[in-house]
Image (cartoon, rainbow, N blue to C red; front, side, top):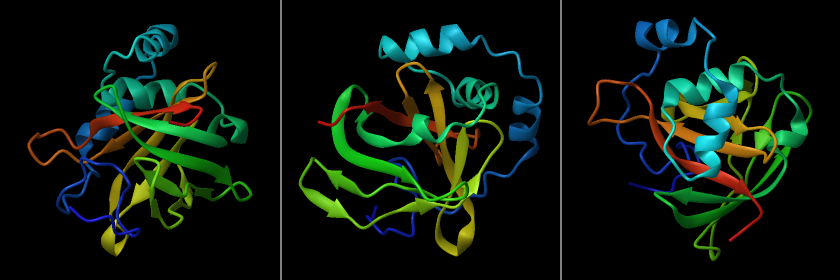
Length: 166
């Protein structure tokens, strides 16, 4: 697994399986996720399904301030990286990242906003590789979703980006 800036920043991104599927379209069609339940589970450090994370993001209107600032990326409750998110206009989300607070990764960007408060990430050859989705608007927490090669489902929860840094 490389730290190539052209790849998705999500730690569980392996392979080049396309995540464009009827599963995702069917899963996202009904917007009935209980927003408070998702945010409360995230605050408790509990896992939220990728479908619930994306439904939550779709239910919230996009606000640049929800994606701005330094956030600490936690995977399995362990802080792994610090990313400083900032938007460039309405169509670019950049996030230079430092693994363990020391190893810099050049500025990675997403230039494709999805419905509501989520961004699409793309890997090599511009294939969709995951999402960065708002999962707690009050605390401005983001979820990093990527491909799961060991699963039939196209997304897995890689971790959360909490406001503040490691």
